[in-house]
Image (cartoon, rainbow, N blue to C red; front, side, top):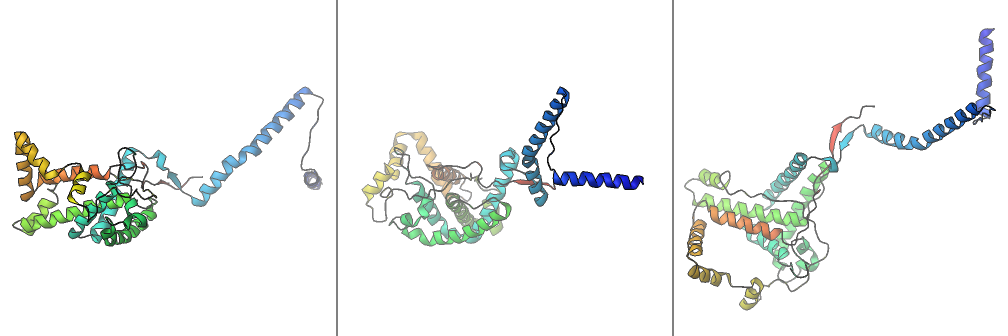
Length: 315
């Protein structure tokens, strides 16, 4: 009998809930009214706040993974990711470029950077040299074969970057690295030829070579630089001198005659180029190349960074 009575009461309650999904309790007591309002406010707040808690948990449950976002990365984590990307891109370019490509690669970097105008703050090293409207110009047309090979290398680098979430490499960074990699390969080739043994030349060119660190994160420009800022192959000597604003060879002779200190420095510098290690020459080349590829460049501090997985989410 008791079981039957309890079952009847439960059935009655279920029917009531089905027929009346919302029940308003009225009371003549002020305490009962206050409690009812408080319960209603809490209930309404819970309904409104539910998406704030349920949605993220649902997404996290599907992925079952937590990530440390880029904005939360520490300085060491950022440095490690950039170094990882730089080494990966360098390895791809080492396979794609030859020592003989160094002059063209440096010329490509120069022609991109030399469009910078200090007065208008336009142009500069922004990767725009690979745009068809700029690459087809007389001063750049001979660089097309190199750009085509770099485009193939870029596909590989971008595919590797997509695996980690680091993203594609900018053309500006790619051109900068191409000049560095090909130049270093030409230096190794020259030192191996000059050394008594091949292993000795590789040692001097490798572990004992001049350090060459680079900065990544340059942003590409989708607009071609203005025309007429770079001398062409048909430019006259006066036009070329006007572009550089002085005659480098004549200026060196003039300064050496006027300043004994500069004369001694120039003598040592010229001797360095003829030595096996070429330390002074390479150090200066690296310094000036670094200044060149930073001319008018814009940098993205978060380039090639990606979130780090923290492990499964514990629910």
